[in-house]
Length: 106
Length: 119
Image 1 (tube, helix red, strand yellow):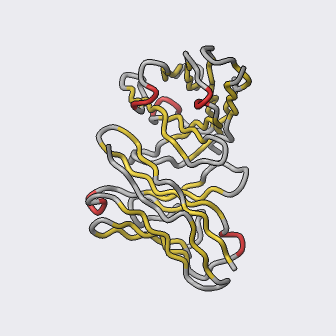
Image 2: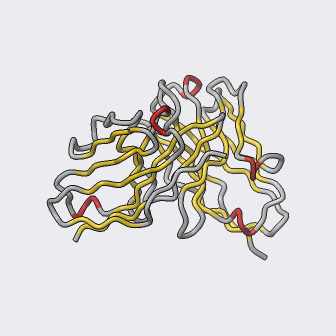
C-alpha cells in the first residue's frame, strides 16, 4: 500500500518561513492536498492539487511537488499557524494521509 | 454555507454496533462524493470509507472492509456509517467530509463524533 512520510515536528521562528515535507514514491505524479488541524478542531484544507489555495486561506500558504517529495511552505509564520499539518493523496481507490507534522512557531 | 453535522457517537461495548449519521446542508448533496475519516486519541487522520454522489460506488480502507458499511440517503441529505464488530482500536473521533467537484480531496469537514469502544 502507498505510504506518505512526514516529519513529526517542525519549528520556525516567528515571521520566518516554515517548510513541511511529505515523501512518497513518485508523489510528483499525484495530486497532493494539505490540511491544517488546530487543537480540538476539525481539519481545514489549506492547499489542494499540489499548489492551489482555497480563497479563504492566506496566500502565505503555498505548495509544490517534485519527484518523491511534496512541500507545504508557510511564509511569514504566525503564532496562529501552530497546528498539525497532514498531506493526502488518492492511490488505487483509497485515500492516504501522511502521519502529520506538528508545527511550532517560536 | 456548507454545514456537515455528525451524530450517533457514544460508548459501545467491544463486539457491538453503532450507526453514525452526517446531516448535510448548504449545497446539492447528491452531486458530491463523501467520505468518513477517523482520528484516534492523540493520533493522525485515517481514512475509513468513501461513497459516490449517487451512492453507486463505495470504497473502504482494508482494515474496515467487512465490518463497516457506508451509505447515503440523498432524499434526506444524510450520510451514514454502519459500524459492526467494533473493537477498542476503533475508538476515535469520526469526521464526515465532502469532496469538491474535482474530487480527490476534502473541502468541508464536520465537527466530528466521538466513538468509544470499551467494556
